[in-house]
Length: 178
Image (cartoon, rainbow, N blue to C red; front, side, top):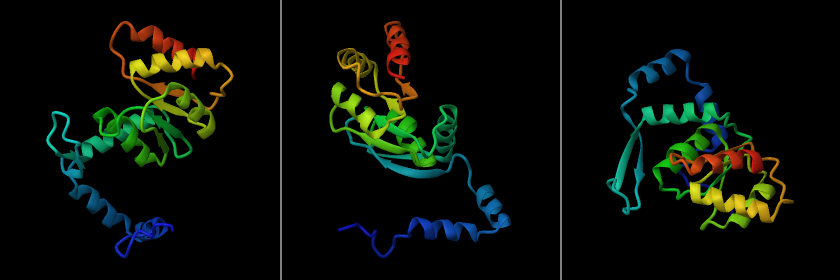
């Protein structure tokens, strides 16, 4: 059956309704009481990285995620395909949190398969793609072998790049994927 959330869960519409009941003065006081360096969330790391198993993140991170989402025009109607591990800091800061702030839908895979990704872009009408340089190269190869897969929904592909070898890949991605 459908998960109801339990007795301590507030339905989204009820939360919105309660939020509308807060006066402008009360809201302003709450905002002023929050410092940008105060914790806003606690993340549990997988223990494989260099960070401590529990990491606290501040409002500063949330502001940066909101700015990042605004720069790429991320909106509620967007669908993101995330090829990065969900626990990766780049995934959290560039995909998960901006998506949560904007309401963009997130699609992910248990393992990377370039052809499956192309089909997911078409089926889910993915608009934003996140991955790494090796995944981008594999996607471009798969695209060359399967040029009829409909990728018209894809408007931006974000791949961390810093090496000279990434530049031609990024140019090809803009031309052949987006």
